[in-house]
Length: 181
Image (cartoon, rainbow, N blue to C red; front, side, top):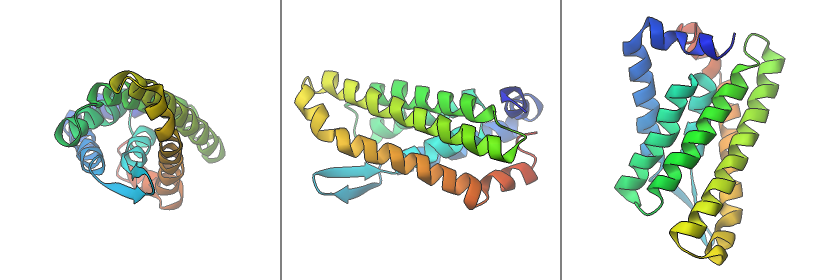
């Protein structure tokens, strides 16, 4: 299986595809407003949703969830970086979806490709937000102060999504429902 099998749902049952994409987008918008307070900042849980959706969905749906969902979440709760979120989380989601789908069909390969994809997606998120904050707030220093939080949020997204998909069985539930065939 590859990304074409993931996008089969978009072709065969558009209503399910739209509903699942919208559901994950809503989760992303909600999680954009929920931050875990840590000394000096917050960790946002939206990366867990973005990476999980990217593991389950085709690249277009992943972009809608990651990019547009983050854009809308920022628009509603914190508009300054909304365009940074659109590009960064959108690209992150597409890359994770494309890379993870390369291992579909073989459980061990799928985990390996999912791990690689989410780690690369995390790097995209960290670099994108660091550069974005430099331009949005016009200060490199501010971006560097927030860098540890970006890294922690990315790692939370990587491990949280892999846990949900593989250990909590979300990937198996998704397959049993016939949503990726």
